[in-house]
Picture 1 (cartoon, helix red, strand yellow):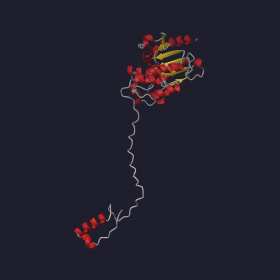
Picture 2 (spheres, rainbow, N blue to C red; picture 1 turned 60 degrees about the vertical axis):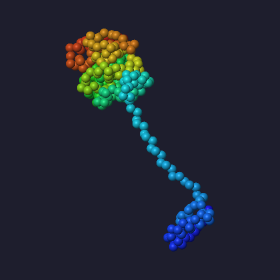
Picture 3 (spheres, one colour; picture 1 turned 90 degrees about the horizontal axis):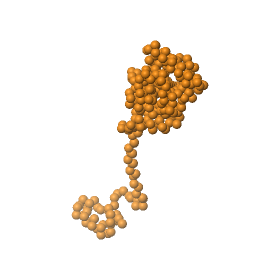
Picture 4 (tube, helix red, strand yellow; picture 1 turned 90 degrees about the vertical axis):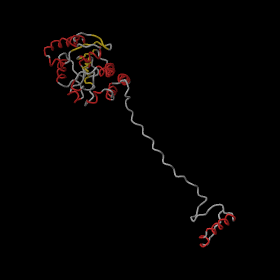
Length: 265
């Protein structure tokens, strides 16, 4: 309990008088000092909430620097149940450095119900710009070649249609040949692509797809000789770009086309 005591100004100035006044208040039962401002003893004390510490934001997931590109590609390809899902899986694959310098991911062109799947090497400059395989001079020659045996990428009829894709979906700088490591990391996507299309025969154009599917090189020795890859009949042919540089080789290419036509009958 507090007792209000008025101390004369003269006594307050005297130290001994002030001490005596304090002792008197203690004797009177005062148990705490009283300030000038009134205090509500019945008001509940409220604590000022402390600001919550900001939770550090988690950085976005990044590819593991030590990840095996082939293993990552295998998992991504295996999870693709459709061609559209495979297209998205390839577009989302960031472990191939070729993607960094490419304008577009070149997936495929033609009729996915076609009996013939053509597998090329990699996009060139024009393919990279348009996002479709075989649209440059070599592609125009390819269209004329296969039109001679009544096959076309634009045919809605599966019997006369072509489906065209490449081992590499991104253009190598300077149109160089893809490196073995680059081929290896994209091979799971190629294998899944072929499985989803399920063609009757596969035609490989050039050394890169020949190496990807058979592990061998030497397209000039292999061309025209049927073999097997992924459980499918496989026909190696020289790339149309080679034929543009070596017109005399078109006679051999025509023989290969006739062999393909005979196989499809």
